[in-house]
Image 1 (cartoon, helix red, strand yellow):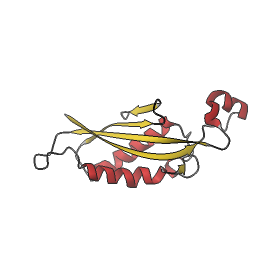
Image 2 (cartoon, helix red, strand yellow):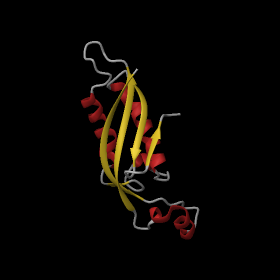
Image 3 (cartoon, rainbow, N blue to C red):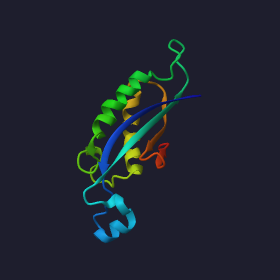
Image 4 (spheres, helix red, strand yellow):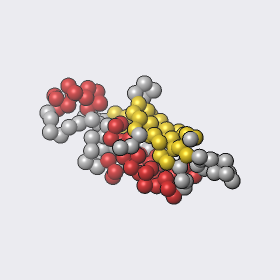
Length: 138
């Protein structure tokens, strides 16, 4: 089994806020991430697919096709956007990195078969250089 990864980058703003809680409780739980006027991150997204190389190309996945898929279906949807307000697939959800990576997985699971027989293995999203989430489906 070969694992192939592609990394993309985007910038986005969000706020962690539970509308059922008071502002004080939100600040207590989410700290500066509950800032009334939002805050932003420089995200790095790493998508890994797994499979066997095609005997004619030697590729598990055409990385240009994967890059194009990621650009159209993910980065163009979130780059320089407010995740809470501007991104339809995040509507009604807490805009946490955990929920964002699950949404990305769902998009990729739907779109990936158009470009490869490889299987989605992992979606990793860095919110900061030290904070990241990995998702393997489920």
